[in-house]
Image (cartoon, rainbow, N blue to C red):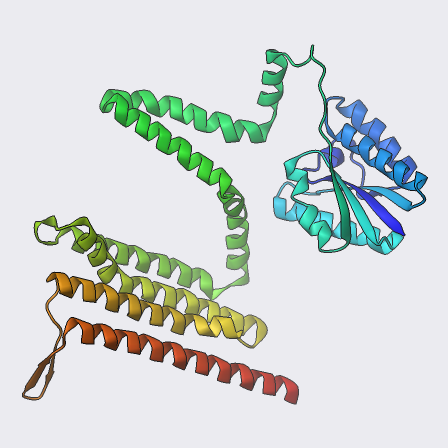
Length: 373
């Protein structure tokens, strides 16, 4: 059984310091790489990670297994490019050595994020996390502070929010009160924790590249997304305007329902505009449209009708909205709130069923054309 012992360097520290072409495989090649990395930067934790990979490979060989030690590294500064480079190197190693499993050696959480990429290509038997033990005389305040200031990711994650908080706190205290200043500081720190905890920074990091690719490829969805954002802003503005203009300002719950009632049509129109652009892009790119994408417009419209019906029912029951009156010739019929709600619910169900039926028909026709070809 052949096993790959992979030392993962997602941030490309090893490649940038040694200028070695990745991947590096083989006992002698990796041992030589340890010397090169150690001479370039003796404080780099990658040295310990490389040595751990050699140790694991030796132990596997001593137990009778065939082990190949190798190093893979991200080749670009962007995370998407780094992950693609690691995936390509792993494919090359698997093709070269025919390995059946892998043991992954990492020294940081950043490197460990590449484990799912490896698992998608080869079975991972174990993930070995290297933790470096520092000597007591080195663990001084000055040394830790120096290491902290030298880490760009830690600086941007900790020092920038802390600096902004120290600037904002005195300004809020002078302008308002100490309680308001502390509340604002707590809100700022909470927003930073959510920003990092939900990995919003990772999403925003790839957004410019995705927008650039969309613009260069001429996708219609870029324009429709911008239009949809504008329509959503219009809906939010009109909803807020209606909520603030309610007689006597009214209870907060009534204001919230009125906001939803006036904003929902615009939000539904925004979603329909965005989904229309995606439908066109899918058709231009693949020549057919997947069933989930076809179901999206009818689903959005159905949800909009149902939400509009329920919010209107609550407002009519509260007396904020007048009862709906239908005039047919000389006959005038006033719908009760319950009847109006039932009409919206039925309309939403009908729209949803029609959308599902149309999507299934289009999908079947596309499948028949593909079989005919």
